[in-house]
Length: 620
Image 1 (cartoon, rainbow, N blue to C red):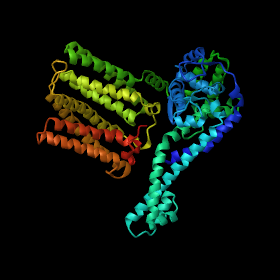
Image 2 (cartoon, rainbow, N blue to C red):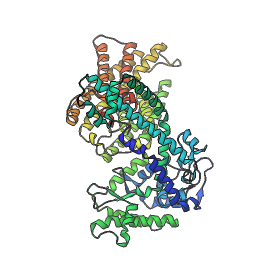
Image 3 (tube, helix red, strand yellow):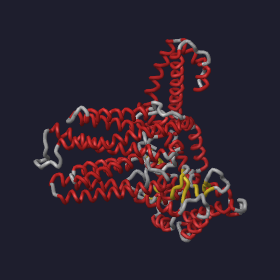
Image 4 (tube, rainbow, N blue to C red):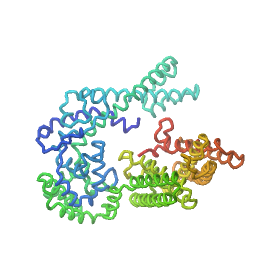
């Protein structure tokens, strides 16, 4: 468990106390009548909605306004989707425009107190709150007589997790000292200081084998319990976090750069109100201009939601943008327009369905052998590739670096490279089967990333360790090799299926490609990917030397990359030098791609393979 997680988990008592304070601070809100609309087809009932106001906000051009979010400039639309998702686990409620929902949460908080929008994500949390519902309102949570029971169980779980972490560090320190030998001078004290442990406890376990055995048994029992309780803890903490977020979104609505900040901090609407710049509360000069513009826009939005009348809001938005546009810290109109286009059209998701259509067309060609189906499939595949290329180019322009910095981006880029390779071969060979496999790989990959949580797919600030030109070279080379290996694996799998089935034809139809040629294609694609992988590994070693002062450190990511390279090297050696072909060769090709998946995805998602200096290469 990371230090940040420990702090957040240890704060459950504070969160609970904060909720109890909310119950006292918001009594009027908890009883306030509200014009609410119910959707009988959903458990998300009593959700405020005003279609006319929603359209008026859209017409006012609020999408042109930037909002600072976690160190990154977002459009209002993107920020709204993120906040609605953080609060409810959905990007939309009842099909509402997320901008309306998020701003209503900011300016009409009292109307949302009774709305059941907080998800109960684990049955045990529902049992503790004694409710069968999947959603709960802030009012019900605040007034629940069972809230204390939920907090008590969460606190107990936190205590067990912290004890597990402490005991694990203690036994690791004892093991390391014992492995050195009898020379313990200074080791106990240094280990205790480094891991924040009791030196007397370390010394006791070093001298008492029975005590060590008992503590190891306790650690195993705690490990099982902590693992079992993890989903409950995370669900309970998210529920408490969401309850607080519901009443504090005005602190998250960061509208303008703070002119007095040297670190590019932005001011929230709550901070702007504290400055009271509309009444001269802020100092004169440049330090007052931006907060004053934000205060005017905030006042206009408050008036709009109070009266339900958005007349004049569009003009206020124009005046706000004219003022803040003079600040060099504020994003350009072009940047915001590209960001809005990217968010609205979601190129990767659109490309997924284009590739699905191409796959169907190639499948029809495989069955009927009509050239028109192959030509149509090729044309649609190229259209999908062009659209995906546009999406990657836009993401590159928005981030300023190759879009390969997290798991979402790496999958999108790899699928693009696979389609580029597949389309090139299909246009040259005109087999139909290459297009079928390539477009199928693209569809599956992009459909998968479209289902990833919003916080994993959104554009993030580049992590400091990745802020290097080597990112554009090393990671890109590795992912292009993965793309070639992915299509190669599909051909190898196809060869194995056909060879084991001992059937060349499908439903009596003539095959598009002989079985042996499929294995040959798999081999040729590995020949393309292997030198690129070799270059990527070498460039990674150079980057490691510049970043960490060593070329190689047997980090899990490095180790599995080496295993992948060795696997494909053996495959090529046996295929080229020893003449191995057929099923053994195809199986070796599939084993190589399994190593790719562990290197690429397993190290990020599977705890047994995780850790090391490459932990930044996580899903987010």
